[in-house]
Length: 328
Ligand SMILES: [Zn+2]
Ligand SMILES: [Zn+2]
Image 1: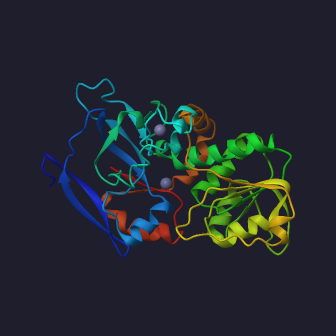
Image 2: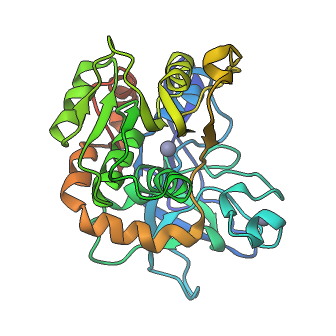
Image 3: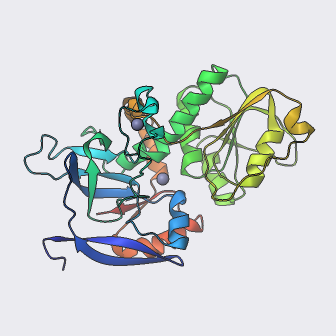
């Protein structure tokens, strides 16, 4: 049993090991609240922490309820925005809160995250979640919808209406599928997807995508690279049509050298990076979730308890599940 002053949480201790332990419930600093965690989604970007170990409690796709007696937001259902942004640097005042240059602290990375019963959260990182959104869909408002829809909006700003353009998504994980649904929501009927994992490409097909015939050198106007794999990034540079755009959303912890040959040099194209999303897009993301709830429900595929987290991680990393949710 957990003593009342303590909470139960996971730690990644390295070598793909998940340990469960207790710690004292954290004391909040001024401008912070305690959030009682209800769901935290597992994420492919945690794999590095899972392999190498982490000092902080991991978990960064957090949904819960503010549990801070006497605070004006006590009892509010919230998602946790992970960049602890300042609100006054140039990036923040221009609306790029995810790129704040003051602190660059990310919840679940540089301070404790949501793989536990409680998490300490700065007030500016509380994103309200309306009552009519189910608990298990709420964490999707972060990476799955927020990150993906932000990348789609970024490309739309550059290329205009994407409906008549040739679109490729590489990597059919939760981010790739989030991009697919956001594109379909904006009217794109024909979207091509590539993933070497057959169960993932079948998943994309079931959501209405067509699969890439990778024996052809088919060209695309917009390529959403969601895998982070160097080979997929190189392939995107080859496949992007003149005047088109490649947007990198996936992550890779090793440097990516670009071969500057004729393929890279002899065409106009935009190479974009998109990271997370600005807080100003949260309401649009809620509206998108409400319009496409049925499709998003297919992505949130498994609920796991803290005791099942270690096994769930192994399955997830093997690509057997799409978006497992730690349920507290
Ligand atoms: Zn994530
Ligand atoms: Zn800032």
